[in-house]
Amino acid sequence: MMVVSNEDLLLGIDIGTQGVKGAIVSLDGKVIAEASVEQSCKYPRAGWVEHDMNQNWWQNPCLVIRKMLSQSGVNPGRIKAVFPSGLHPNFGPTDENGKPVYGAILYSDNRAITELNEINQRYGLKLTSEELTPKLVWFLRREKEAASRMKRFFDAAQYFVYKLCGEYVTDTISVGGWGAIYHSPTMQWKEERCEQLGIDLKLLPRVVPPLSIVGEVHSQAAQETGLSKGTPVAAGTNDVTTSTISGGATKTSEAMAYYGTAGLLPVMKIDMDIALRQPYPYEERGGKPQDGYLFDYPAYCLTTGDSLRWFRDEFGYEQRLIEAQTGISAYAQFDQIAENAPPGCEGLTFLPHMLGQRSPNFKPYASGAFLGLRRSHTRSHILRSLLEAWGYTIRFGLETYYPDGHPLKRLIATGGGARSKLWRQIVTDITGIPQEYAPYAEGAVADAYLAGMAIGYFSDFSVLLNRWLSPGEMVFPQPEHCEAYEEGYARFIKAHEIMEPLYCLVTKFHQGKE
Image (cartoon, rainbow, N blue to C red; front, side, top):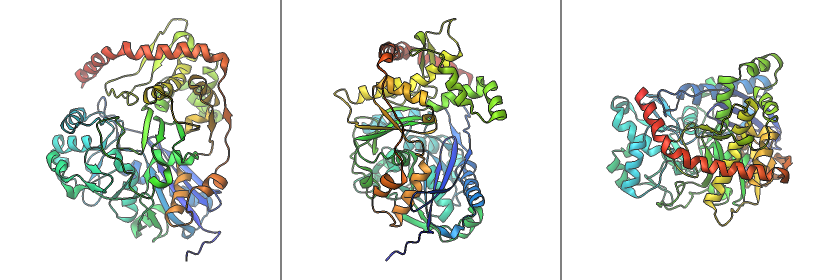
C-alpha cells in the first residue's frame, strides 16, 4: 500500500518555445515554488526554425529546477515524482550518448516540404509540415554526415526524460504528431513504410503511455538539477495536452484557447483521462491533417503571441525601456495603446501567418500581411489588428471544421497572452463564445498533477478540478461590437483569397536571397 505524507511534493517542468517553466506543488494544490527562464529560437534560413537542444531542452530546465529548490529551501527528497511536457512535435538528433549532432528542428519549421509532399502522395495522407516524419526523412537524405552520427532523436520532453534517467521513449499521445510510420491501436512502428523511407527501426524509441514511470533520476542528473537520485520520472507528453488540462478542460465538450507563442484551439476527440492511460485508437486516414492526433486543431496559428513579441522586439524600444525602469511589461503597455483603436481597426486587417498557415488550411508558404493600411492608421490600430487576428482565426477554424455547429460547451482561455483582458474580450466579441480565464493555468502545474497520477496519488482529475484549480473570470460578448467585427471578419476571409496568389512570389523572393 502506498504511504502518502502531507510533506510529499510533486514537480512539473514545461519546456516551451520561448521559455521553460517549473512548479513544485503540494498534494493539496499549493504551489510551493515556481520559476521560469526565457529562451529563443534560431532562424538559419527563411522558413527554418531551430532550438539549441542542450541549452533549451536540458540546461534551461536544470536552471529552473535549481532556482526553485534554492528559492524555496525545499528538501529535494520530498519530491516524489517528475513529469515533463514540452513543445511538439520536433526533431532533435543526437549521437549514442545523447549529444546533439544538429540543431533541433521545430514544429514551426518548413524545410521538409518536398519530403512532406512525397509522403502524402505515396500513402494518400494529408500530413502538414508540422509532423516529425518528413523532417526525419529530410535529415537522412540531405544532412548525410550528421545523419551518419545520429543514433537517437528526441522531442523536447523526451530529451529531458533521457537526460534525467537514460531512457529513450516517446509517449502514445505525442507520437500522433510523427505522421505516416506509427500504428496507434497496436503501438507498433510500420516496418514496411520505414524501410521504404530509409528509416532504420533501431533509431526509433519505445512508445509508452504518458503516465508511465520509465526510470529514476540518475547520479549525473541529480548533480545537474539538484533533484534526489532515485526520484521517479514519468514519460511525459506534449505541452498542448498539459496546457489543456491546466485550464480544467478534460472532456470532449471543453476546449482551451491558448494564447501562446503559437495560438491553439485544440478540441479533444476522446476524454483526457482515457488518452493518458492507453493508446489513442485512431486509424490513419487521408482526411483532415490532424487525423493522427488526440486533438482536432480548428485554429492553429504559429505566430499568435510571437507576432506581438516581434512587434515588441522591432518597434517597442520605448515600451521595453519603461518595462526595465518600472516593471510594467511591454505587453501591458501595448494593451493601453491598442484600446485607443476602435473594433475592426477602421478597415485594417492583419494576416498572422508569419511562419506559414497551419489551420484550418495548410499553406506553408503563406506569410504575414497588413491589408487596408492607410495614412490615418496609427500604432494603436496596428497593435489592435494583431489581437483581432487571433479572434478571426478561431472563428475561421470553427466554421471550417464544424460547418453544422461546433461541439464546445466550455471555452477556457490560457497562456501568457490571456492575461490581457482586452485580448480576451476581443476574441469573445469576434467568436460570440464566452470565455473563462484560467489565470493560474500553467502547464507546469498540470505536469505536477500528472506526476501524482503517474505514481498513484490521484486516480482521476477530481482533485485537480475541485481543489487545485479556481474558477476564472468570465468575459461575455458585447453586442455593440458585433457589426464592426462582422465586417472585419468578412475582410479577414477575403484577404486570404486575395493573398493566395501572392504567397508564391514572396517565397521566391526569400529563396532567391538564400
